Length: 278
Length: 70
Ligand code: SF4
Image (cartoon, rainbow over all chains, first blue to last red):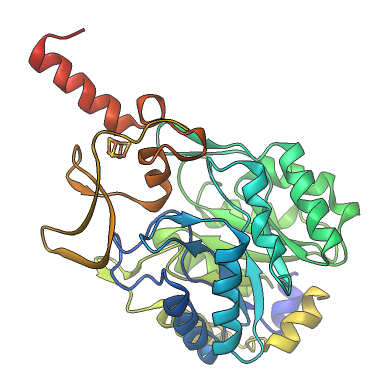
């Protein structure tokens, strides 16, 4: 988790965020929504070099789904379509009740990882994803009971404070996802990323997620800083200005090419498990 | 559960966009709705278009102006 890791050519973990909960086919006609579409995208991303798949579930209408049953359907299809990839379920859910937020943790088998949003953030003009400490604690507790490693979703500096406050409760190494974008997210700039990284505890691992046009530069910078990268249509639908991406896998292919050029090998799923202590 | 928004419709096509399955469409904004916002439209999880959707509120304001209603 440092520039030395870059110099030592530590493997970089590529996470593919295939679907998300915010936008759908109204924004990108090929954004995968059904369990079959998600499974096909998952297989393509694994083949391209992704070792973690971040999953959300949708109703047939493209609307958000949180039920264990729908996540079970998605995860089964993804497991059938992939070889050995690490499955990570989202527990995000702006506006959804806490009880529903925990449902994606209850599939059989449980996901190896799950996202844990570390504090509030605004959506649109009138919605807030509250993520109170009580909610975070409840979700984290259930992850611990079910042997699921949390990825701490750090949408801004305040969430980093919240994460550092619970770092002693986490299995080693803690895994931070540093997120950059507009609104209540961290200011999307290389300086912000460097500052955030400088506050991480010794031995931590981090991943970088930049929304929209910030995906490419900030994930590239993460590779140089010894971090890992997340790409995919959940976070960005444009491959370059004015040009929709062809697929999730196209983003993974680009991340793999960049890591290769920068002399960091891309982690296999086995290496990702070793790095993250899964 | 709050009422569903009166502007919500489910459509398979609008303009140049077509889909295999009907999805939430906002007849106030004349566009398909993002999945996250669609939970407001449908009145799920205690979300309510009358308080939580700025598109509904802006459109309601327009209509007030047109009709003189309070
Ligand atoms: S976007 Fe707003 S105005 Fe449109 S249908 Fe949904 S709640 Fe109603």
